[in-house]
Image (cartoon, rainbow, N blue to C red):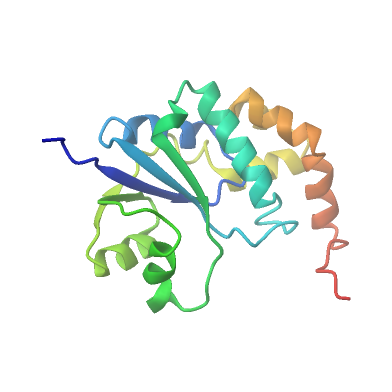
Length: 182
């Protein structure tokens, strides 16, 4: 009889993906057979907190994982838009992802919602959170501080350059990137 597959869930916005994300995925894969990586806030882009599109984040994350020697055959990446009803969030999540047995998160609110739905929650592995932090990386990018490039895989830095991500962030912060209304 075949051993059942243990599938985990790992959530994040990945704005942008950094080495801490890659190392967390590597460590989680030591505990599960497959990992569903949920890219949250999928509908948001071109705003200071979420400057990159979900397509760009999927691209960056896949390249980052490859660079980190992660076996992509064990990874399922699923973008999920936010909903306003937190009580209905788990049903919303479940409708987007395959079944999973355990979830990894560093977000206490997400952990609470998952536990209330009966899911085992484990603290995601954290790596120098002060240093490997997407908000900090975006701040360094805005200050033209090249240190940000050491915090992300080279592939992520290259993609950000290709899409003019730093220029995008700077334009967004000047307030010129208001939502377009037709």
